[in-house]
Structure formats: structure tokens, C-alpha cells
Image: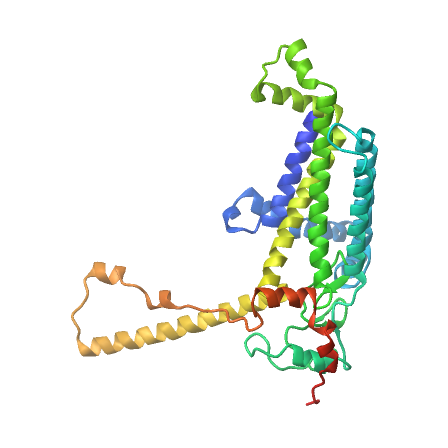
Length: 391
């Protein structure tokens, strides 16, 4: 029973941490324990740790911690890449050790011993491609081509020079402070890849997310089939109903089967839960980035659009408020009949009519947007033939 309760606690704590970390800032969790847990995980724990180190060991140790933070968070480093290989290697080791003894089995043939290895190898290949491919570095040799490929929309992008690289910044580009380079069609800097995600490697990044989601789904389903196969092979249902007199129904058998699985195959259940949770996270990330790709938008641009829309909305509200004030003053001078209190209360505010439209000039339709990710502009022959005159 100790192992079973340990597994239940493991699942509940894992779900609590994942939901708190990823969703704790959502309005639905405002003022709840989930929001406080999110604050603790993202800021509070590290802040308390830093204070503790400073109080106990002095400023030198706290400065050392800050130096480690700077190296881990603000400089290129392979820490998360090593962690990725560790997670992949350890997970696959436990899968081989705990499930390969039952393959071939009732539902799975021997080929899954080799397809699982092939699937992991493809995932590692996509990881390496994303990590070590050029994201679309902009330099003095290709800046004119990128300026032609990505014109300014004069909304969120305007002509300006990169203060660090000392070259003109094409639209949709950004200077990454971690990699210290300008990247075309910049999306974000990915710590797991130790690389920027940009114009030239977004396709590899998307393939990485999709493949690892499918890999987790494959692993979860395969482990589930192994467990169901063991129930069939050992005739667990027959033993429970005939020898123990358990009612032959789902509600009657489910608790006993779950108890048997937790006692006999707890490692496989832990692996299945882990793969299912990681798979759900990866599906969310892939869905988010797929939506961006379909509208030809980047993560960096979503923040730019949010800032622009917020500023534009405030500006329009100010204009609407000024117009309403002028109309009110002119109405007082014209001595129009007064509205009843109820009509004045229910009258629509001019501020409610304020509407801000996002005009994304880079969104050129579903097919074009997908092609731009799969076949980047800088990979096309027309890109190298384009040369703008320096300004």
C-alpha cells in the first residue's frame, strides 16, 4: 500500500506543480493557492534562497550565486542541452529495463524494440539540427537581402540601426542579447537548444516539438498496451471474478486491477504518467507555435503587437473621451432636453465603440505562411540574387 499511495501523491504533486507553474497567472486562479504557488515557483523560491545565502554566508556567496545565474540565464551555455540528453537517456533506459521483457507480448510485436530506438534517434537528430543550425544570423554581407525580403510595416517595425551590430535592422529581426547577434524573423531564444529560433531553423524547432509529442504519445500508448497485455496473459480478470468473487463489472474490477498494477508494475505506471504529462505540455507548445506560423507571426511579434494595441487603444479612448466631452459642452450650450436618469445610465459610452484592428502585413495566407517556414526566404535562389543599394 505504501507504493500505491506514493504513486498517487507523485501524480497529484506533479499535476499541481505543472498547473501552478504554467497556468498560475491566469485570471481564473487569481487570489487562489495556485497563484501563490506560481509566484513561489517563478520568483519567491529563488528570492528567499538568495536572501538566505546573503544572510548566512555573506555578500560574496550571494554574488557568486548571481554570477551563476548570469551564466545560466544570460549567457550561452549547454546546461539544458545536457539535461535534455540526461532526460532522454534515463527515460529510455527505464523503458527498456521495465518493458522490453514483455515485448513481444499480447499486443506488441518485437519490432517495437527497434522502432522505439529509431524514434528516439530521430528526436535527437531534430534536437541537434535545431541546436546547431544557423537561425538566420544577419551581418553586413546579407543585411541588404534581408532588408528586401522583410520590408518595414511602419507599425511595429520602422527603419533603425542595431546599436550593437552597427548595421541596419531588417523588419522582423531582433538582436539577441544572449547570443550577441541579430537574427532574422526572430522568434525567441531557446535555452534547451542553446540557440535562437529564427527564420532558418523554425522548421526544425516545429518538427522537434511535433516529433517529441508523438514520441511521448507512442511511449504512453505502448506502455498502456504492455500493461493491458499483462492483464490478458496472466488472466487477472478471470482470477478476480472466479477465485475472489469480484463482480464482473467495470466499477467492481477497476479498483482491484489498479491495485494490482500499482503493486506489480509501478515503474511502468510512473513512466506512463511522466510521458503523458510531458506530451500534454509539448502539444500545448506545438499548438501555440503552429498558430503563430499559420498567421506568419513570431513570439517576439506577439509582445510587440500587445504593446502597440494597448497604446493604440489608450490613444483612441483618449480621443473618444475628448470628443464626448466636446459634445457634452456643446449640448449644454444648445440647451437640449435632459435625458431621464435611467436613459442616461443605460446610454452606451463612446469608449465602448473604440476598436483597434491588428493589421499584420506579413500574413499572406495559409499556404504562403507555411511555405515561408518550411522553405525560408533566405534558402531560395532569389534571395542570393537580391542586392539592395546601401543607403
